[in-house]
Image 1 (cartoon, one colour):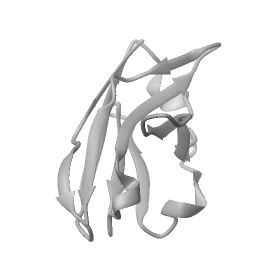
Image 2: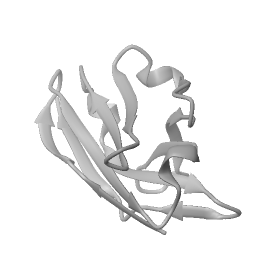
Image 3: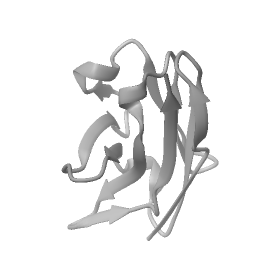
Image 4: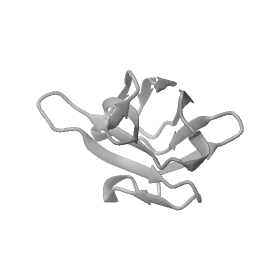
Length: 113
């Protein structure tokens, strides 16, 4: 299983970024996929989830600003992040669980106020 995340960067508060995560080695279309984030000294936090059927769930702090989606043909997971805030600054990881957790390499998002 390989998960390759990309799309991070530096933006000003109020800006937008879209993260992508290309998956290989799994039956992507049947897996629940997740985005997590982590800041130094803190535990990794679940940000958003999308099931194989397209149902989504978000942590309260990003509801209405972030959108998780998936392209099962291209085997890509997305996280559209709008109205970014300084507190969204973190390393973002894509994730799926197949008996154990599989993680992408992480992509840094930095939001300056």
